[in-house]
Image (cartoon, rainbow, N blue to C red; front, side):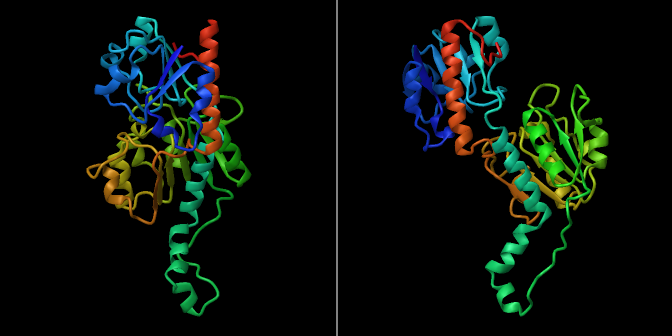
Length: 315
């Protein structure tokens, strides 16, 4: 099978993509714009994408396409309805980045809760060394033990974060579309009102787009730390930026954005340098082990498709 990797640069330059040759004849492109789709896909039967958008316009330029392999769990960048109509199979990769994303989500919470930006800056600047006092204890920070940790979205990542939160002594509240018996499930409004920490792990869909509205964000506690490692568009980003500026939340951690990369007219541009804000460049999923696992899973998806089996199939 002929395979085209359309945005290899988003997978990191430390991965050995030659392993994909086990699945077919591979062409690798660092990036692919909408205008380059026809040329880069050419007569390929399989495309591997991470962030490239494949809407109806792009897919119409791929007459030989049989399989789209998304190097991610989310697949909102692919026109699923069109693929279904045209008989194009779509596979994602599930569970490969659970540990990586959970690790960053918790890291953001700890970074913000412990005011690590302020404390490390006091050492770097020399303030600690020249102050003549053995310790500095401002700004005041608090233990997480006994706090309420809200989790929006309770799939693999949400569950992993929940276990870590419980290990830190937190009471875990969960918002899940279909409540489960093994977690304390509440509605989204209750989650916002009661959480001292709130981490978001929801997939992007028509029902979750903008689900954290301005109204819900206004109901967060003023000492709440809000972290989004899911999809930027599940939140009202302007409302989050306003909440930071107006002191309506204690801290904001975000790894995902409605536009990536975000530009200078994005709401977060004006708050990116604040000490209680931790913004990262959509890297939560990308620990080396996770990326390597992702490629291995894609190979298995392609081999399964070639055998006529269904593995990680969306369509």
